[in-house]
Amino acid sequence: MHTMDSLGHAPDGALISPAAARNADAILARLKPHLPESGKVLEIASGSGQHAVHFASALPHIHWQPSDPSADARRSIDLWAKATALPNMGTAINLDVLDEASWPQGPYDAIACINMVHISPWAATEGLMQLAQSRLPLGGLLYLYGPYKEADVPLADFNAAFDASLKARDPSWGLRDRGEVENLARAAGFRLTLRSEMPANNLSLLFRKI
Image (tube, rainbow, N blue to C red; front, side, top):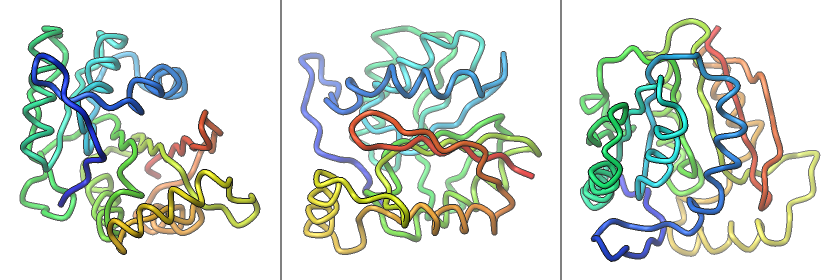
């Protein structure tokens, strides 16, 4: 499953995502208070690897496990990891939420998924929920970040244009309805505990396994 957005190449051969560079601090600030003091976090669709190194660096007592179905992304993640030499960041694993055989055993204390839900088919979100249900303990955290449609909130012009551009690239992509994502999570045994507005018309959605 392809989930990578457009990324440029850094001089050292790693990939660079301008969006990841912009939103890493804001995501960390929202995510950190809800993580345990120590434990294991599985990141789904880690992309360039910038988020992984940023979060692992800021959370030294958390083992951060990046993953991506793209070989190019995994190479980039490991280049970032080699450059930073963080002892609490794992080697990128080949994880496709649509292929249960690729899922790691776990368990994990939290699963983080940033900017995947809208750049993948709906089946990927269904797979993500199944993975989270099977790999998180009771009380485990599922963190989602990205733009969403909401029934009671007018869609920002930028997000409307972004949604149209995504669907032009792949009809199975596009901004998801937050209520539909919440219903899917509830069916998998999760409860939405926090909806938080983020910069650039994005949302942080935090779910706990119940």
